[in-house]
Image (cartoon, rainbow, N blue to C red; front, side, top):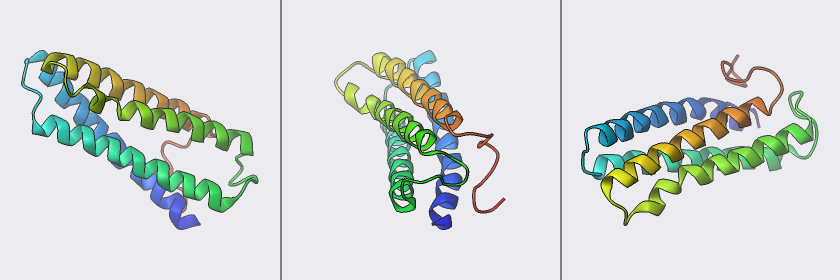
Length: 140
């Protein structure tokens, strides 16, 4: 079980790095009026896929660890975290919904969706007690 929590803790940094790359890509595409190309679609897909994987690992950990206090987190905190993170994953998938829009609309809406997703991730992490950003559970 510690393995899942450690993997979940490490994977979040990959999600953050891909999200930052995506924000830069979408921002530059919007400012410089680039075509919405394969690299933009690929980064958006990578971000959504990593968010899916993070949700899957977190949900498996949630179910496997049972409905008890785990690592000092009451069940209420764990449910809040799961719910907010589910909303973050849904927001991460929004750029795929604008396939038929023009490039500038796709960049603008995609940038907004990624920002909302990241905001929800921050809210979801803070739903858990204590500062969870700088620790990798199971390692240190």
